[in-house]
Each structure stands twice: as structure tokens, then as C-alpha cells.
Image 1 (cartoon, rainbow, N blue to C red):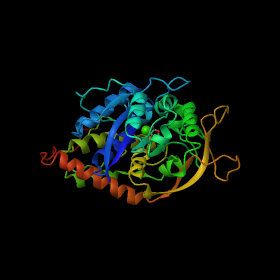
Image 2 (tube, helix red, strand yellow):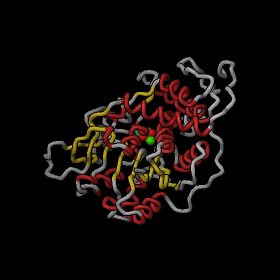
Image 3 (tube, protein in one colour):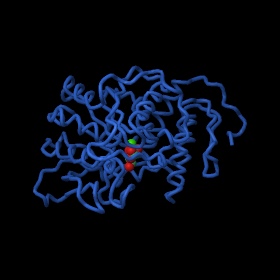
Length: 355
Ligand code: RIB
Ligand code: CA
């Protein structure tokens, strides 16, 4: 059965793979894309979304612009992590498609009201626009069929401060609005939360890019490496593979620069795969709240697993998965889709990559 998805992203490198994964999935239909400020400003997120849709020859899908800033604090972006434009070293063609006339928050509200109980929400960026939508439509948790959130860190170190994860850190007030709003949701409406605890086990490596290129029938098959200079660019014959390689290589460099290895944590495409198939994840219910006051811990996601607070669970936190099964599925779907989109591209320039 096709899942109709409201996708809320801060496109970013791994958000880009989440979008491509959904476009490549026969069991997914994107009802609309909310462009949320986070990795890069909202306007750049929207451009990135439109550019990937055009490159992927996607049907007309609404891309709405989110709020410029978080609910209560100035925006903080992270171009050092995702590249100057949010898509690593990729230089995506400037899109012709235009953004929607309605805001991201309004798109959330209108879509859930028009399709009550049918849509799956997937948030892979800060929760600013979902929080704004909840303020306009408090019944949103009941009107959504399911919500999946990439965010937070529970029994795991943060990636932004010692205890905080980026999406929550950018807009902790919004995260509190969202988790409070789901505090009385019935068990089948609790958000599925893909936190760093699990997403930092989803480690993409150069061999995964090779498998993607092979599956797409792209040439030449390139091996990216830490020795590649920043100005190197893929010459893969398949445009999806070419731009994906340039995007992900920046993310490899970033993780390598922090001694995490020449790899990239694929937070967002994992959350997308769970949104389409929750059976990929083992979850545990907990009551989640957001620390807003701590001098050292502000924006920390706190999980009460044992009911100490006496409040009902408002989240199902992913505590287990099979990364190999996820990568097999992601590579098959994106690789097959890339091949179908660009079947007969001439063999890429056989000379070695631009240095
Ligand atoms: O902490 C990881 C999350 O922050 C991912 O969604 C990444 O894209 C960034 O938004
Ligand atoms: Ca993201």
C-alpha cells in the first residue's frame, strides 16, 4: 500500500538521500515537502528540494518554505557539516520549479485536515514548522496516521553539545511543543523517534557508493577517498549518482575530520525507511521531554523509560535495527530508480576524476 508522506526536511546531505529514497520507493507518495531552516537557511533548503526533484524527474510535488527562524532563538546553521549550500560538494542544476505560495506550517495543517488519518509525517530537521502547525491545529496528532522524527539522543552522546542532537538543538522550544502535543496520543499515534542512539549505527562508507553506482549502471565506478581534494568532482555517467557522490563525499570528509572515520551517519534516509516500514525498527515506549533551562544541558531530550514522572508515554524510541538490511534496501531502491531515470547515459569520461 502506498504511504502518503508529509516530508519536513532541512536538506542537507542525508536529507537529500531521504528524499531520493522516498522518490525511489513504489510504496511512497510525497504529499508535500516542508523546507525547514536547520543545516542551511530555509530558502536554501527549498532550492535544494526543488533541485533534487528536478534532477529526479519527479512529478509535481509541493515544496513549501518554512519559517526563517526557530520559535524563540536565532537560527544556527551548519554549513561546515553539509557544505556551503547544504548539499556537500554537489553543484545541483538551478531548479525551474517554484516554491508553493503557502507556508510550510500552513501546508501541514491543510494536508492533515484534508486527509484525516491518512498521512505519515516524517521530520528529518528541526521541528519548527511542525510546532507552528500544531499551534494552528492542536488536533494534528489525531489527524496524522503516524509521525516519524529523526532527532534526539537518549542513552548516547550528543553530536552538537555533549548531550544534544542537532535537530533538537536548533529549536528546542519547537521540540517541546511537539512532544507535549503527543503526550496523550493513543499508542498507535505515538511518534517513532530515530535518535542518534540508532542512527549513528547507520554508517555509510565508500563501498556503499560503489554499490549504488553499480546498481544504477553508472560509469565509471568511482572510489572516493580521503585523498580526494575538495575540488574533485564525480564524472559518473548517471546524474543522480554523480551529484549524490559529490554530496556524500563532503559528509565523509566532515566525519573523517572529527575522527569518526571516513564514513557518514545516514540519519535521515534511515528515518524515511522506518516511516515506510516500521518493521525495520524495534522500539520501546517512553515519556520524552526537552530540557529548556539547563546551562549545560539545554535542548537535551530526556526519556523516562520507567514511568517515574507518572506521565503516559508520548514516543516509541527506536532501540534496534539491522543496518545491513537498511543499506541493501536503500541501494536497491535508489540505484534502480537512478538507472530507470537515466537508462542510457553515455559512459562517463574514462579519464580519472577531476583533481
Ligand atoms: O543530527 C543529525 C540530524 O541533523 C540530521 O537530520 C542531519 O541532516 C541534521 O539535520
Ligand atoms: Ca536533516
